[in-house]
Image (cartoon, rainbow, N blue to C red; front, side):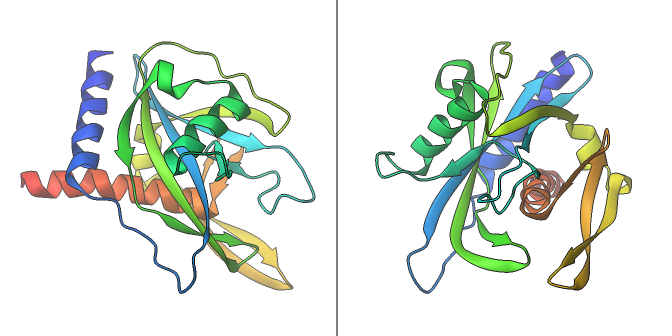
Length: 203
């Protein structure tokens, strides 16, 4: 467990030393935020993912992703959005049970191969006390993935998706028969690049 806690401290330092990149679009975009929730366990730091429920109005219906959602008019900014959305979707009160390690690079939303006027802000949190996720109707299930699995390049796969009659080959992780790809894969890669930047500064 001590090794996992030390790894969380390294994550916190890496995020603090690498300012998150901002996405700039010609017009003011819609905003959303997601939570990259980490938990120190005896074997490793684990990362929380959700399996989104099937819904025809959701462009990411059925996908694996991070908990989160769009900015509501009543939210005090995207940080407030991530606190509210994570609590609504999986019942975890991040303000009470976790510490904020910081933001990582923003990403522009993409759905079915098309860029959207949407900017997503990921925030990384470390749980400080055990808490059991309680998914709501928007979430089929949750999945914890060891950080060491995500950090190992040999665990990256290629998956094929058919979009508008075209075949696209995209990078992904496959863990316990769940496929993590698309925007979530990009956020993971950004997170790992943040960690790698700290290692480079040490050399």
